[in-house]
Amino acid sequence: ARQKARAEENVAHMAVLEAQAEAQQRSVAKMVDENSKARKEADAALQEDKAIQAEFERERGELARRLQKIIDEELRKAGETGGDTFVDSVSTLSKPVAGRLTSKYGMRKHPILGYYRMHDGMDFGARCGTPIWAAASGTVVDRYYSRGYGNRIVVNHGVKRGASLMTTYNHLSRFNVKNGQKVTRGQVIGYVGTTGMSTGCHLHFMVLRNGQHTNPANWL
Image (spheres, one colour):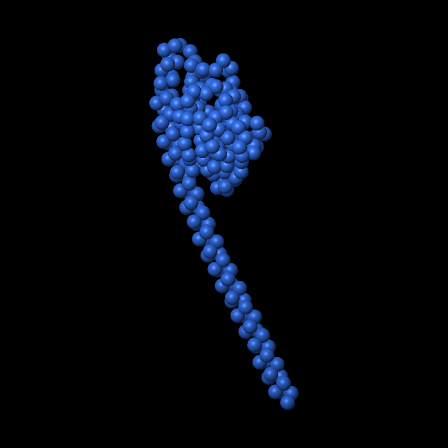
């Protein structure tokens, strides 16, 4: 009877061990499946990031080509007149929106893409619908939608300090100007939004010198 009881205990113990082994196998299989799923998601995210970056570069190239003709013409005019063609009497740019600075120009970790890259402008936090003002007098040379920058306005201010000077206003909720329209400093040209690749309502403000982004803080 004692041997029978011991045998039954062994059988029960073996059953417990087998159940534990099966549970561990299921746990390992689940971990492998989760790791595989995570790898696939990471690969998909990486491919999407690459596609977005490629589209950014394509957009930049297209904009650069469109603006280069304007830049060449402005520099030609400046050469003929022997001075700047900046159309505003004030030498610096005005703050384009009533909002606080939330992100400076320079390298930073992108809030959506998750890796470090150049932040090519200054961000001002403001409620969606807040008016955006032209930073100086000039002409609207482009107004379009970009996947990255959302609703975007480019204003040409002529030649200042020997170089073409333009400003761009990005992620707008809506426009208040048309292509080719002349604007004056402080005129409402659009409204704050969160279009394109944006994490919330704000204005991404850029300054282009000869078509290349530069630190807006040096002009404000």
